[in-house]
Length: 206
Image (tube, rainbow, N blue to C red):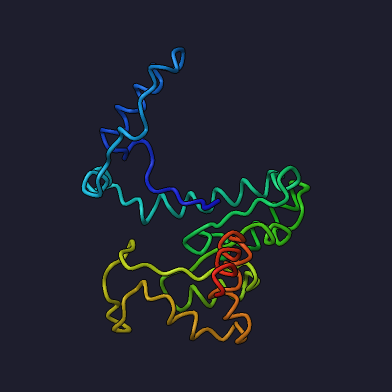
């Protein structure tokens, strides 16, 4: 499961709000429920809906951090031991505040957050100090490579001359990964997180 909150109800396109209203109205009469295939939302519709809301700088990362705290407080893996979560954007504020999460877990009588890291994985962030922190705090087995062609920040960093979202440069440059750990971040970890992908690649001889 990938935790990635792209906007919220206050930024939903009008088509989605109308579809939800019809869905709610049909609760007592399932035959009248709207057809999911009838809901059409274009990229332009999404863009217009979120303009001015700055979800990429506030809501996304807040949601990522909140999701991790809910996992600290809960125990979903006792009932679903094969469940895996990927929290994007480097886990939000989680790596930066790792000591806080450890302390909160102790205060709540919960296990150390590191015990979650066989089930919870973080991807990459947009600058070298961030990748350095991520790979220093979070074990390499729980980090997945991710990059974007059209991400939240589409510009070139004037300090480096490279795109902000060219995250491979940061993973290549960090001193906190051995060659084997770097290979796991780039591919090996993903094959553990997504075993069906590993099976398909194996079936194709790759």
